[in-house]
Image 1 (cartoon, rainbow, N blue to C red):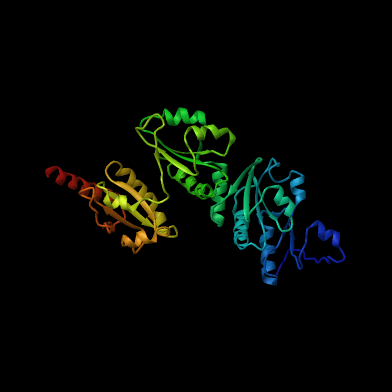
Image 2 (image 1 turned 90 degrees about the horizontal axis):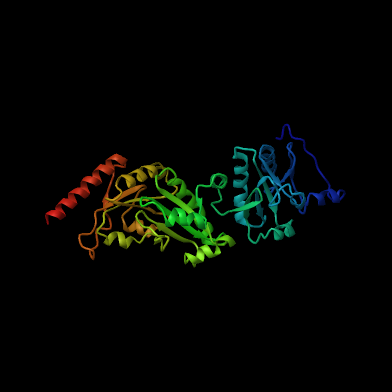
Length: 385
């Protein structure tokens, strides 16, 4: 089953010191020694099939089990000049054991030799984990030339690899006090800034972080729209945040086109208030989607084009039906993606139809031309009245 791999056994009763050096605390334990150096401990079922599959996979996976010696020698960790992505975990922790295979998969699929991947078992190396202030499991940190970046995204290899790329090539602009004065307060009239005022220790801020990076990448090629962030927990930003009256985290502000002297619109909640759309006199087009829906992902850039083409004529928004099932049910959504047009209430106090108008043809050009004709016709009827 393991052709090309040498197999040996160690009796830890006779070779106790050798086992202690490897921090072998339970029996049986399976260790793979790699040709490139280092070793990896196995955490899983003690069956011949599972162990052999792990051994084959481990030989080609750039992942090591780390010990205090690796940190003390400054080979890995915050004192190292090399980049390391380290998963601090506990074998008894279910989320840790769900993350571990995805972390190994990310290590195997990462295309590059500039980052080392490692794991630290905090049940064995408890003092080491305490030294690095590991208070919950799993805690996964990318040490980028001594600077730590904690991962807080989904436990999937694709999101882990996305986090690495975003860390190495940050899509979000780091806003300093001087930059804020120059580029936001004194910005050009046609420029728009979205800024996330956050604290790196804040749980909701960590949850927002991956979405904020995706938002930045979404607008990367859009002219005059900039996405930035300010870490208010950084001592250099303490007075900067206080002077801008930032008192809670995360605080998201939109510095819109035409507004000067640092004026902004505050984002007051994580969900669009559907009642505002239903009672609004402004026409809206809404994309109801689910994050797991393949067709929704294909349609997503098309909807961005529609929003850009209809800017100033029709407002555009999206609703995640996994997060807002009641709202989607109320809107009569039965499939994804579903695009609905709300033409606008005739009077401010009136409610428009919550079901809206279904746009069954999802071609961006068709939707844009259809809505332009619809809104222009509505405006002509209003003018005649």
